[in-house]
Image 1 (cartoon, each protein chain N blue to C red):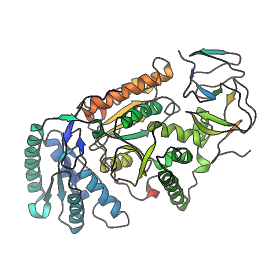
Image 2 (cartoon, chains in turn green, purple):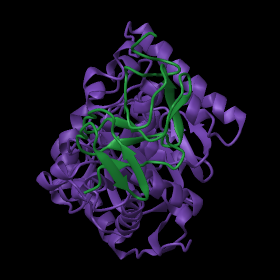
Image 3 (cartoon, rainbow over the protein chains, first blue to last red):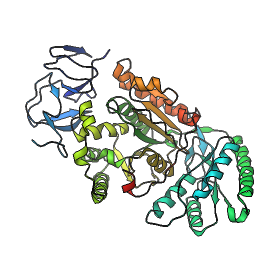
Image 4 (tube, chains in turn yellow, blue):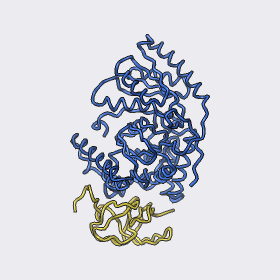
Length: 91
Length: 387
């Protein structure tokens, strides 16, 4: 059973296919990432460090930017990502 | 990359059909029931039903274009118009003749003298045409014969990571082999149009994509609806989608990563192979109807909740985004892409299966929607009614 889905080699996130517990190590397709917090199924985990204002890349495309520095293994969602154009939230 | 063996029906205008339908197209709501009765009497004839009864309002241009386009879809061997005998109907028939791809027949109630007589003569004509259609054999077709429609409906949290990107791989491969592929649903690309525009073959096409979304936004703002604040929805966010771009990218993934060759207005025909974006409503059936009028001859429909709809003339392949629905609704689903999330198959493997399925269905294999006689058709009215 695959735990995460890597969608493009350019991505700095992966999509979790099941709930991932804090401290859980994911070793898959030659990569290793340790979750630093709980990440729900269907949500994103950072597979590289992402600096504040840097693009969050999914499918090899920019889906928004980090609103804070995001370490490897973190839950990447509305609390630390904002869309570039249209968004439901304000910084 | 080797080209698959494809078998189809060559049409007089150079396009190809993958079905050989006798289409029964009533040009008035009052004749839709008659069309259905003919469909029930003549095996594999296809009837269209709608609620239009000849009103000439601001939608007439759009409606006439759709009727003329559907009548001339390359999957038709022949089209029979059923009419009351009005001038409005004559206008649509004349417009259909200009396209000139499909042999057209007209049976009017005013000439027949009675509904019963109209029905009898229509059944006789449809049977005779069916016999002629059955005598035609498929011949070897180039991959450029394929005009693929990309559609999703009843999306879920898996759509953007399983079925849509897998379909995108199949679409990319077909486009590379010289086929045409069309992405629709303007509402769905709102938020990622700048990313899609960056994939345009040239800046002019990129600008057309931007302009088309801006026009759509103006039209919904006119209706007093602001969808910016509503997307991604609360349910989307709970499911893990963080930004509108992310949601739109997931929908647009059906179109893979090929460059956009051009932009089409609703129901317009693509004129050269490649990947296109068409301005369509988000409503599934209206979108498929627009595709059919544009000459799409095969479609793939990804679904998370198991939308049962098909199309009047386009064989429509259903791809499930998750294994649970894919196994529960097996009589609706042709292929399960949920295996990508289960971990038993890769995106590339499922992309290949979708590609193979497209070829198999083009060559005559019936889809679940066809076996279930899903011949849905909807006329698209103004945007306000289609949200």
